[in-house]
Image 1 (spheres, rainbow, N blue to C red):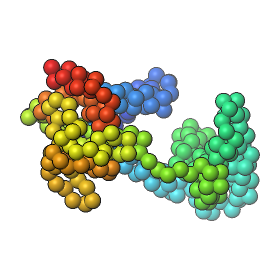
Image 2 (cartoon, helix red, strand yellow):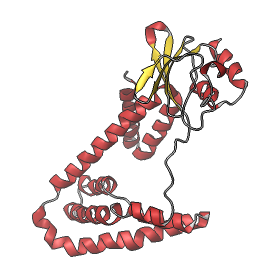
Image 3 (cartoon, one colour):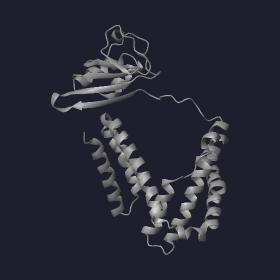
Image 4 (cartoon, rainbow, N blue to C red):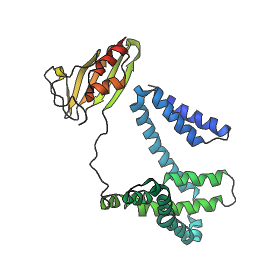
Length: 279
């Protein structure tokens, strides 16, 4: 239950260590995240959900911070200069930077156009503006006032037109899961695990009776949630796209790759992997 908090603590410690050694805190947190994902794959959904919530709360806090650090009485004096800077960033600097960075890699032109329009909006400019204040610069307040206009212009101009541009460039595709989502939850004292899996169109077990899917050793399907109701499946229950499966692992050593392989139908090597985990 404490894995999300532990993952957050690892990230905070990585940032602090990097700050003390004059290294990049952002790169340190990124590397820490990759390490946590590798070390704790069984808790990835819980960690991802927890940190997604933290990210949303952080963005709200940053906008609140922007509001309390910007004084409305100071805005009229820098309004037109700040708007010119914001428009220059949106219409000139970012498209030029995107073209220089992406065209050499032979990106399609429409992808470059979309990337150049999907600029830094909201939280990131606010974070960067705080560096001027925390660094003790004489014009730190002025930087924050300018960033206020940059955020407002970019949100109103880019944020409200991004979806329309994506449709215009024919970059909108039907959302579809890229993989089968499997999450393991260890049951400590019982030396067992509860496994959750959501079936997508990529699952080879879809359309087949449960008895014919041959789950790996130690794995049993306990419950199927479908259409707002849950039921205990029988051997002749045909699995469908969107089914939320609750499975049990009596070995206590299940591997998500084994279960994902079974659901995706990657062949008899799955049974061998299952036996090795049971041993």
